[in-house]
Image (cartoon, rainbow, N blue to C red):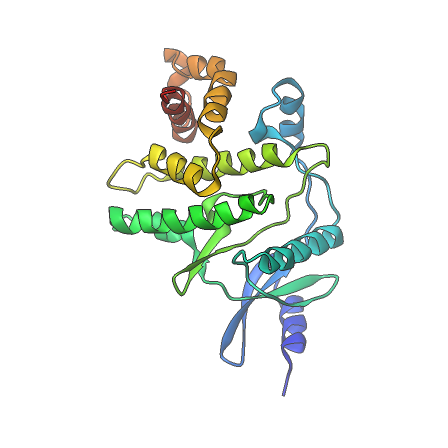
Length: 258
């Protein structure tokens, strides 16, 4: 009988996708191909002039370095009680993960989702994110697509991003939260408005981050010129909906009461 390792190696050679599922003994697993990480050149350029948390460039890593970094971080997170899929096999070219369900993004963007179910997912997402930050760790790519859902649990995936050692952990945790909350901006399928204040306040409760509101207000002030520019008539007409919603979110955050 073929082993999981043998099947994984065979499927790896016949499938060019970066991430894809395989079946072994009636169980689903996922193969993730080793891939290098590179900082976005445009992002690095703008970060020199606008050192905003969202623009912090990630480190360049070879495919093997990225694979070693991500699998080690997955295992570390599991040891800390954070929900991550188990790494069941790895080699220099790829690694294999236990199945941990579908992306939470797909559930939240279902146009038929109820408000109650939506915030049930949000609560689970925030709880898992808070577990990471309460352990003084960071994710690096906290967009909702990088969380999955299975058997009533949310799992954390895609941990390949890393940053300079000179970047302090509090900055990286705040960057995580900015990426997380911005994920909701793109949700146009919902029949109700996203309550950003609920998300902010619940995260503050779970992480005891009493200074979060001030950090968000400070961030909004940093981009206030761009917010003003986005409201100039001839510019506003040329902005995409995602950019408009980005600035709209931070206008809302700017109005946070002290």
